[in-house]
Amino acid sequence: MRVLGIETSCDETGVAVYDGSRGRLLAHALHSQVALHADYGGVVPELASRDHVRKTLPLVERVLDDAGLVAGDVDGVAYTAGPGLVGALLVGAVVARGLAWGWGVPALAVHHMEGHLLAPLMEPDPPAFPFVALLVSGGHTQLIEVAELGRYRLLGDTRDDAVGEAFDKTAKLLGLGYPGGPALARLAEKGAPDRFTFPRPMTDRPGLDFSFSGLKTHALTTLRGIDAGDEAARAAVAKAFEHAVVETLAIKCRRALVETGLRTLVVAGGVGANRALRARLEALATELGGTVRFPRLEFCTDNGAMIAFAGALRLAGGDAPTAELAVRPRWPIDELTPPAAA
Ligand code: KG4
Ligand code: ZN
Image 1 (spheres, rainbow, N blue to C red):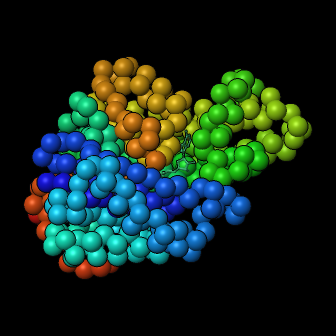
Image 2 (image 1 turned 120 degrees about the horizontal axis):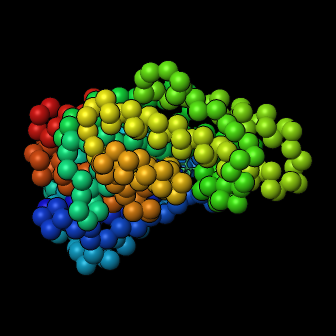
């Protein structure tokens, strides 16, 4: 079962082919629109859609070529149907469904966050169900109890900004451009650890929800007292912000593992690429006698491989092809069901 996966939910065009029967990714390619949106300080939806129109089919051709496949070798086409930008999603959906129709193979709508959540399972020695998943991206901050493929219980969610969004907004305050998460993390590496202390929102009360908008405000207030040219102070602010985020996430992950009695933590989404977070959660897993798993760095952020992989698992599990061309800009992950059980 060879599945072509197409991801166009935001500002990356991702395409990949996953071979389900051999458990192997055959090829993948990514086109990032970061440069296209940089001048605007954020993703411009209409520009994103138009660029997906230009890039998706050439990427499909490249990926098939890299995998040594011709059209008739593909057994199914999976595409991200939400959550995400409606126009961007529609481009991927139309291309995927058109290809599937032409090739006479099933087309399958995939949930973007399920793709992220399953991405660590593509790595060698994959974690077994059940586990706790921490999804940390530009649009989501969620803790999920994953019983099996498609059975997800939301344990905690953000009340305001997603953690990636908090990274990006704070990076903007630091003058680091867009998307600022990775740039902020690089600046933080040079920062003195003890110069500033940021709060750890919502850790002093029970529950697994998050709130990150206050950290951005705290950064703004702290930066007001700092000379714009003081590089060491700016790095120390980045360090304190990152540390507060990492500690907050670690505290909630620990709670989620203790409350569910599970010992495997799976981390996915763009912020899962953050090295300080990876190191802190490794330490937490060791302390609890459990394990933590991440996707490789390039599959933390948006990519086509996770969509091809999720599609391959679902088609192999018995999911029926998706009958209608419909995308869902909002789509709660706990509405999903295991394959064939819908
Ligand atoms: O999963 P993703 O590629 O897209 C969404 O589905 O949102 O996540 C992108 C987010 C951005 O907010 C970006 O700044 C953040 O992940 N990010 C990071 C790092 N790499 C990406 N944040 C902190 N540290 C990083 N190393
Ligand atoms: Zn994503």
